[in-house]
Amino acid sequence: MRPNEPPLLPGGLPIFGHALAFGKNPSKLFEAASKWSTDSQPISVSLLGHRVYIILKPQDRQAAWKEKAVNFDEVVEWGLKTIFGFTEDAVRKMHLDDSANMGSMYTSAHTFYRDNMAPGEKLNLMTTSFLHWMDKDIQDVTRQLEAAPGGEIKVNLADWVRLRLGIPSTNAFLGPEVFQLDPNMLDRMVKMDTDFLHLSSGLPKWIHKDAHDNVNKMIEAIANGYRRDSTALPFITGRMDQMAERDISWHDQAAATFTIWQALQANAIPTAFWMIYGLLYHPEDRRTLEEEIAPAFDKSNRVVNLDHLVKNSPFLSSTFWESMRYSAGSASVRKLTDDVVIGGRTLYKDAMMMLPARPPHFLPEVFGDDCNEWVADRFVRDGTVPGTKNPGIRAVVPFGGGYTMCPGRHFATNEIFSFVATIFRNFDITLCDPSQREVRPKTEWPTLTGLPPDGDVFVTIRLRK
Image (tube, rainbow, N blue to C red; front, side, top):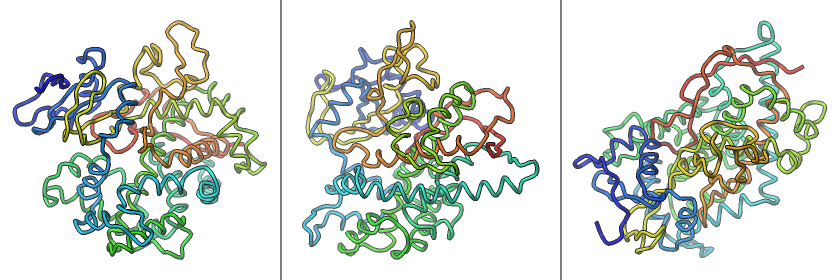
């Protein structure tokens, strides 16, 4: 160990280090690191011979995101090639400049997406498109229920939420042709998440052929289904045009678009699931939410006042931030381009740094003694009852931080608030088995998304009278 370097977590195996523990349950590894670390200072783990620093304390995370010697571009380049099916040719050409002198597409990526998804006309366009497609989907479900025996259907809640949110968001961003070509896109995305460890292993692709073939099928659906004259959002075409100017193939352009689509679904669907599921177990909280959201809807139960939901619905907002906190499972990864001091420890150049989202979200000193539970009013309660706290939404960090903070966070807020409110406004949802144990986030694998439930939840859905 080099001077003042974060100490190595005990328990690593020869050659593998902590890689097997990470692959089996990364959340447990991060929890073990938190308990072992002195005052939550940075610690090290060994992953197949590579030293990786784990940042645990919230203030150290903030320092890491602000640090100039923390690089994201190399991680993105690795992920595009290893996980998302980019060719070596595309990875190389994305470093080239274009006629607009934008420079490397890696360097300009965050600015491009930030400018195209920031509050204003462009955000309004994508939100309006999403609401349009969501209304069409709600109408389809309404007709299904009207034709169903007894006016009800029984469904797996996680699967149903995935379709209800994933179809309109995909149609809004890419146009409807992609789903028409491959109706199983969302199921393939679930498989991709369960295959994440195989995809990210760096092993030859033929070893995990099934996992990589699944990703390629989604890329092919976009390559064959996307149309420039479709209703797809302009910034999608704009980014593809930038790649075309660098002579990047159509397949790789589709792969780049696939990364946007995957990010669109990654946290929105799990967050919406946990919001809906949590309120099913607490009917009094559901009634509070239904009263709060009512002014946002017209007589046809369509959203006509999104500002009311986003700006004047504190209880809805609390369930949103609580679900983001409760289901957080991913970790930001960065590479150090120089030696830096964070949390009183020296982190050395060329090492990797990991900032897991889950440990800071389950600190009793921040969130209260009930931090391991889903609590609808956590961010609206006064926090004066012993054992309870309301740290404010800034204590939740689902969107990363620093200059790489998720540029899609504004759309995600509009999307999820309007979706969950619309579901409760239009449908009566009840658990098929009220005695079923409460499911919890499944932490048993590394993930690119919010965590899914650790068991199936079956519900009965009827039209709300």
